[in-house]
Image 1: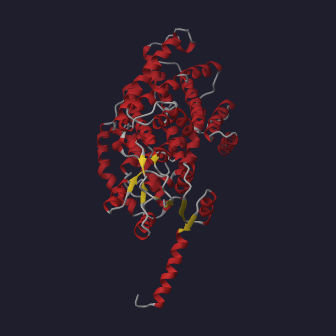
Image 2: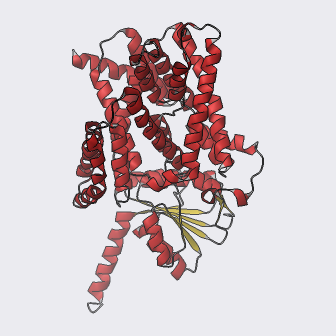
Image 3: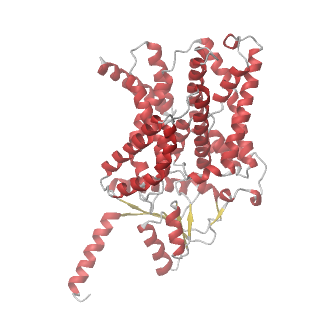
Length: 530
C-alpha cells in the first residue's frame, strides 16, 4: 500500500511539474499544484513527504552555510534593513487586518490587536527555501544582492527562534550554551574532511555534518535544527573544498526539495472563503517589496541591486505556517488561519516564481526608470568595476588560470586581469604581484557592474566546474563581448557544449596534459642530459 501511494505521489508530481515546464513556468509551480491536487483527492497521507521535505531544507541551509561569510551579518545594509523591514511590515500587516476587521469578514470576527500582530509578524518573513532556490538556480548566492538576501534571511531565522521561545514559553536547554564548543570542533571537522578523497564519501560526510552536529544537536537543546545546519555550514565555509561540496550536494537537495513544495500544497484543502482571505493577504506583498527597494536605496545600493533583492524576497515564508499553528495552539486564531496562511504562502511562491523567472530583466527595466545615482554615494561593494586597463580576462585563478595569466603577461606582454571568488586565494595572488579582483564570474551582477570593457580582446574560462564556465560564457556573450573566448574542459561532451555556446578555442585538460607528457618524454629520450 505504501509503495502504491508513493508511486501516485511521484506520478502526480512529475506530471504537473512537466506540465509547468511545457507552459514555460518554473517546475515548482507544478509541484505546488500537485500538492493541492493530492490534498483535494483525499488520497492517504505519505509521511515520507514531510520527512524528505525537512531533510531537503536542512541540506539547502547547510549548502548556504558553506558559502556564507558570517561577517556580512553585521553590515548595516543587512541588519538594519532586516530590522526596519520586519518592524514596518508587521505594522502594515496590523493596520491592514484592522481595516479588514471593520468590514465584518468572518475569519476576523472577535479578533484583536494580539491576533493582528501575530499574523502581521508571520507575514513579514520571506521564504528561506524559495529565495535560496532562486539564487542557486541563477548562481547568484555570492552576488551582492544574493549576499544581502541570504544575510537578511539568516537574521529572520534567528528572529524566528526568539519568537518561538517567547510564544511557547519553552526556553532552550541550558545545554544550548555548550554549543560554543562547535567553534573549536569545526577545526576537527575540517581536518577529517582533509582525509577524505572520495567524492561519494565527501557527499556522505557533508550530509552527516548537516544532520548530526547540525540539525540533531540543535534540536536536542531546544533550538531550530535548520539553523544548526546553516551554522555548521558557515563554520566550514573556509575549507578549500566547501564550494565543491556545495555543488556535489546540489542534485540530492534538488530532489528532496520537490517534497518541500509538495508538502506546502498538502497544507490544506482550499475553500472559496479561505482562498479569498489568502488573496487579500497577498496585497501586502507589493508594499513589502517597495519597502525593500527604499531601504536598500537609502543604504547606497545601486537601483539594480535594490530591485533584484526586493523581487527575490517578494514571497511569504513557510514560517507563516509555524506562526499560525502556534497562534492556534494559544487560542489567538482559529484553525482556519493555518489553511489561509498555507494558501497565501503557496500562491506567493507561484507569483514570485513567475516574477523571478524574468527578475533580472524586470529589475533592469525598473532601474532605468529611477533617478541617476552618484557613484560617490554608492556602497563600496556595489560601485562600477573599471577594467579599462586590461586586454585579457582570466576567469578562475586556480592552477590552470594562474598559468594562463602568467603566460599572457610574461611571454606575450598582454595586460591581464584575473577574476577569482575565493578571498584567500585572491590575497595570495595579489601578494605574488598578480592583478586579481575578487568576484564571481558566474554572477550576472558582476557583469552588470563592469565598465570600459571595450578594449578587452581575450577571455579565458578556467573555472573548475563546467556549469560555471558555461554560465560565464553566456553572460559574456549577453554583455556584448565579441572577442576571443578560450576554455578548458574535462570531457568531450563539455567541449561540444561550450563550442555550441560560442567558445572560440576549447582545450581538453587531460588531453592537453597527455600531449605535453608525450612531448617531454620524447625530448628527454633525445637529450638524456636534459
